Length: 343
Image (tube, rainbow, N blue to C red):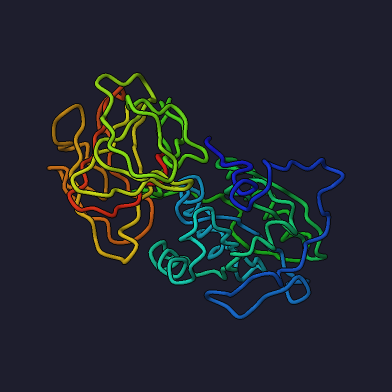
C-alpha cells in the first residue's frame, strides 16, 4: 500500500507533515462548509446529514491510491443508499491543476462517480478533519459521531462490516449483508503483488533518485543526458528541460524520461502544454515497443497523446514482473511531467 501521507502539508506551504494524536482528532463530524463547490449535489453539511450514516472519502484524481478503492466506494454508495448511507467524496488537490473545477468535473465523469463530491480546493475540509492521507475514509453514525477512520487502500471487508453495523444501529433492516467484490479494471484494478518501486516525483521539491549526469538546475533551462545504466528506482531526463518545484517542463522537442522500475504497472502524471496543446509521445520497454505490455494510455507500438492533466497508465506487464527500463520520448515541447506511480 503506497498511501500518500503528509504530502499536502508541503503543498499547502507548511514546513512538513503534521500528524495528530488520537486525542487531537475530532470525534464529531466537522462541517463541510469549506467546500468551494459541489458536484452531483447541492451543498451538504453536518447538520443536513444528521440522521444518516455517512462515508467521507478523501481523494484526489491523479492519485493511484485514491483511484483503486473507487470501485468499492461506488458499490457501497449504490448498495446501501436505500438503507440510509450517504457517500460524500471530498476532492482535496495535490497538484496545482487539480484545483481547477473543470478538471475535477472531468475526473468525476471519467470515473463514473455519481455520489456528491465536495471540491475542497482550499483544504478547509481536510484540515477540519485533521486528515493526513490520500485516500482516507471516515464513517459517521446517525448521531454525527465519527466511528471509524481508515487511511490508504485495503480493509474493504472490515469497512463494509462497519457500514452495516452503523446502518443497523440507525434502524436499517433487510439489506444484503454479503460484502461487495471489487471489480476494477484498467487503472482502477487492484495493485499487483510484486511492487518494489516507490512513488517518485519529478519536480525538485520532492524528487529523489535522480541519475542524469547533470545536476538539476532549479527553475532554469538545462540540457540533460539520460543515465546510461540506471540502477533500480533511478531515473533521469534527456533533452532541454526546466525543472520546477512541481514539474519538469520540456523546452524543446524531442525530450526523454527514463526510469528503471520493478512493478506490474508504471504510471506517470503528465499535463499538456500550458496553453492546452496536446503532446505526442512514444514509450519503450527495455529498448523496444511495449507490445502486449502497453498500458491503457499507450498503444502496442508505444504511441500516445497527452490531452488532459492526469495520470497516464503507460505500462501493464502481462508476464513475470522483473526489473525493466522504461523510456518515454515526447515529440512536442511544453509537456509537464510531475510524478511516477506504480502498481
